[in-house]
Image: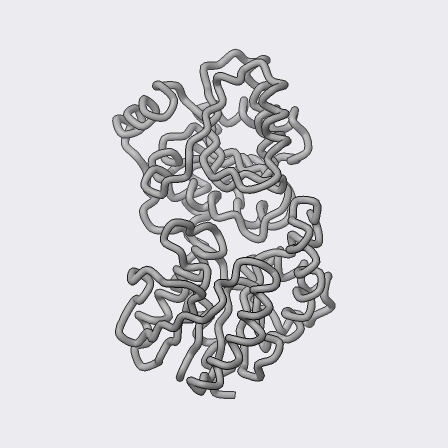
Length: 373
């Protein structure tokens, strides 16, 4: 088969959730199926690390698609032209966008419908595009891959699609995450927090991630229990971060909140040396940091909404993300040695449910079915 892949999000300096899913699944598709030809569609000069094997043919399609107008031009003008030019059998788009104009069978990954649930955290121009095109994209796709059963259920409910049109292929843990020895943890804590134990949040900072409420809950925990713990916020400041600044101005333990930039080389160290991951997002299609924590032997505090209970299983304390007292109490519970060890054990069991290889195989089966239809 000639398989086209939307690889515009494969950027060496930014590999967050959606891009990570595309990277991990596409790499396995290419390496596991040398009999097929993969056409990678980039929207700018690409890093050669993303050309995984000789059966990949890269193409740069203009214009660079990073704005709603340019999205339209890229997907509705450039994509159909190249799909026809190379006589593509099937198109794999992992970022929730596709071409309405092309008739080529299309497999699209749906990660979440955040724009419907938390529109206030999205730029006006982007929101208008999503409101217009996302329902159309989901109806146009010949088959949909959801990254969790929670996302599948949401798509069925919001768009009135049949369950048969959607199958589930989970995220898994990126490579490199592992358990640290005690001496490694001590050294990492010395570097990151001057030796203090810490809770960690990993991910970008914007309203849906609920970092402002995490900061307030941490301050309540510190005031009530007087421990030496710090809170590490590890990730880029994305957009609409004013609430985080307001929270910092309100708390009594501002010096115990540490911000670290998201350098990829550091994330494993920051995660594996933490007391616990605090991932109390308001909405997630999956929540990769949860499985990163499990792979690192770190227990988790996460939210009782959307996909997070499904992904976390029994390896986490589940809290109301809108209740700072609930979050604070979970912080107190999770530093108990017995509770911590029990959650780590359950997290290791839960991690076995997620496999990039299995997800890539399921995706390939769907591509094969559509391409040979």
